[in-house]
Length: 393
Image (cartoon, rainbow, N blue to C red; front, side, top):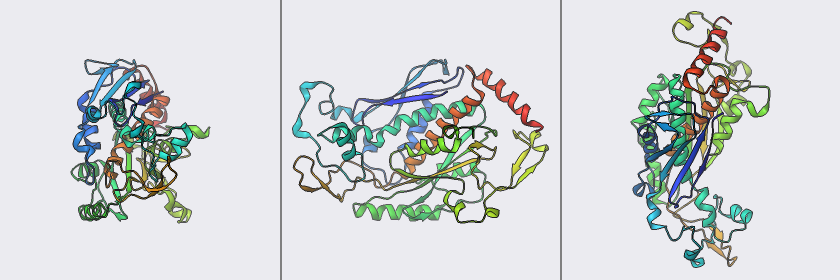
């Protein structure tokens, strides 16, 4: 199994992740990780923090000469802003200054619930860890997962499909061509006209001190059928992907395939009809079975079915507004406008990169559960044996 833990605060010295279960001989470099970290910092509508941070990763263990060793991989992303917070966020008691306490929780954040749960009287103790800054190191972990999947010709990508109620209409192109189009867009969008409208909406929201959310879509291609399982609720692949996506800060909804639209259609317009062509195997397909449509989003009965996996996640507008919402001061119990932390007007493009990362991690985990071995070579033998098993099914 592939598992990981992250640690670190938004204005602490660094963010850290330890990955356990990575097999040996997976090519992994800081360049590939930094590419994903740079993508996360892009996007129209980002705030001032992106002008301070230029995220890069350090690999501190588990990799030698560009390949994983199968021992735990330690990744670090340092916070450049730490130099301005070294006393306010110091672990040393002599720097304690209660006069700097944040006591005005922001609506829509973890501030109030976290302060009540952990008995904190300074909301900064909550907002530092609950901040979406934590996703930087998860993107680094996702880059490692992508590197593992790439060895087996499994690719993860995506695009922004909606911002502020403005829907994009991607052209009818192969997914990897759409990913290439998205990479050229400030909004990671595949529709030029929609992108311009999205930017205008972001500018309007910024001028009003407001924020905008949106929807991102992530796809996975190259998977064989059979990842995940129907035999227990917590082994279902769609359930695991949904949990991973919902773990991203500000994500409030997830759809697989048609999602909620499937509830509005008759069954004849929802279920994907099955076909078989033995010639597909000679063309590199892992199964002779195929579907013309993909309303299921590549998952049926909690298992991958061989079609591209398609999942969407809805991101709410960032709750830190420069036109603050009403709140209550936890110290005086008087009404106040909520405290303002430096923030973005729209972080939907960044959410796409994070969504790709957590999907890649969960897919890599399910892949290792099915074909797991201690080395890339062993996993390839397991995968090839399975593909031979289903070749003539």
